[in-house]
Image (cartoon, rainbow, N blue to C red):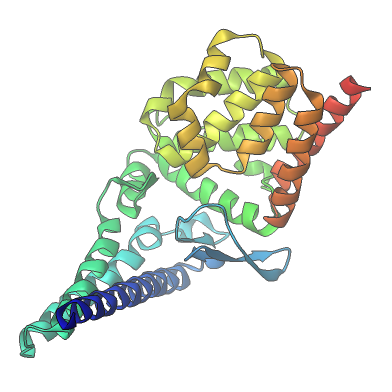
Length: 336
C-alpha cells in the first residue's frame, strides 16, 4: 500500500508540474508576442487561453468564456502598413520560448540533479516550451496554422502579404466592435494575384464578402462569391474551412434548400465535426435554417434562434446576432 501511495503522490506532483509548465510556457509566449507587438506599434485587443478570454470591446475590457479552447492573442496592427513587420508579428512569441528552452538546457547542464521529481519536472518544463516553440515551424497545429505557416504563406506574394495585414486589421476590429462592418472601405479590394491556394488571399476574399453582407450585398452576388472560393476548400486550414462551410451552408440552405449537394454537405459527419470544433456558434443558425427550410418546422427553428442569440450576444458577435435576427424575421413572417 505504501508503494501505491508513493506512486499516486508522484503522479500528482508530475501533473502539477505539467500544469505549471503549460501556464508558464503560455505566459512566456504571450510575453514574447507583446514585446514584438510593442516594437512594431501593434496593440493587443484580445488575450484568449485556459477557457477564458479578455477582450477590448467597445472601449472596455471584458472577461468572457469562449466556445473554443484555442489560446491566442489578437492585436491591432499599426495604422501605417509600412510599419507592419510580419516576421516580428509572427515569430516573437515562439522565439522567446526557444530562448527559454536554450537557457533551461544550459541550467540543466550546469546543475547536477539527482534522478528525482525535480529532474522530471524540469524535463517537463523544457518539453512544454519546446512544443510552444514549434509555432516557428510552418504547419497546421490543432486545426490552426502556426506562426511559421502564416509567415510562409504571407511571403508567397505581394497579394498574400497585403492579405495578412488586411485580415489582421479586420480580426482586431471584429474583437473591438463585434463586426467587420467598420473596416475601412479602402481595404475592401479583391486581390489581383496570389492564387486561391494561398489561404491568406482566400481569407481576404472571404472578408470582402462578409463586409459586403454588412453593407447590403445581394444574396446572388454572395452565393457567386462563395462558389468562386469553393475550389480552394481543400487547401485551407480547418479553422478557416469552418468559417467558409458555415457561410456556404447557411446561405445555400436559405435559398437552395432542395439542392441535394447542400443537404449532403450539411449531413456529412466530417463537416459537422469541423463546425463543432472550430465554429460552434454556427450550430444554432445552421440547425435553425435546416429545420425551417428542409423539415418545415418553424417553431423548432425559432427556439434554436433564441438560444443562438443569447450566446452570440454574450460573446459580442454582432455579425452573428444580425444574421440570427434577420433569420428570425423571415421565419416569423412565414409562420404568420
